[in-house]
Image 1: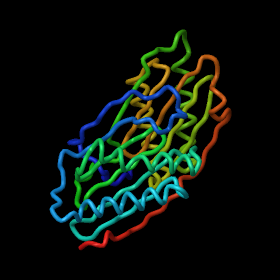
Image 2: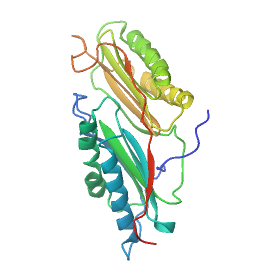
Image 3: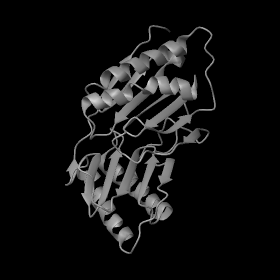
Image 4: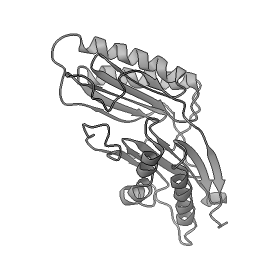
Length: 262
């Protein structure tokens, strides 16, 4: 497929696995962290200032965009990064989610050369210039619920919902969520991923969920460029989720801002 081998992460990253909350509405719950093993030497504070400027730019844009890329600093001390919110969040919820990420990044990863913090509703990542790249299809995190569905037919219904979602993220230009026979499924790709590559990424995530989660009633799979989640509700999908298919395009923005240091 046509993914460039771009990523803000290496396999050297340490992933912190945390249990996901049962309620998808708790969008500020920590899912995982990814922290580079390398820290930056910063005797003059130029990296710290660039990172602070980058965080400020990303957070400020989260009031009006669901996806934003930015660069701060100059030369070898420059930093690039981005944030993305789930497309079903409001602008105020997106900001509330993203605004927590800089503090969490500093607390969980410290002054590393690259980091990614994923909450249920949003994520933020950054890297120093020249950081090594990996595939957009690289798996970052996977979890399956501890309860298995009772009776027959669950996996067939889930796979039908997955198939609808795989098509939906393409026609929806990067985001799709739907309910189907007591299942709620969602898929989203990073904001600058093309429709075809998005479909391939989501398909890869679905295959992992099918094989590794089996008959588990819930699961989440995060690849570098996309994620999927599904939940089964025996008594019907709760009203907080849409009762019909919904899709929307990811807005894309980018910016460059200097930290004021060379």
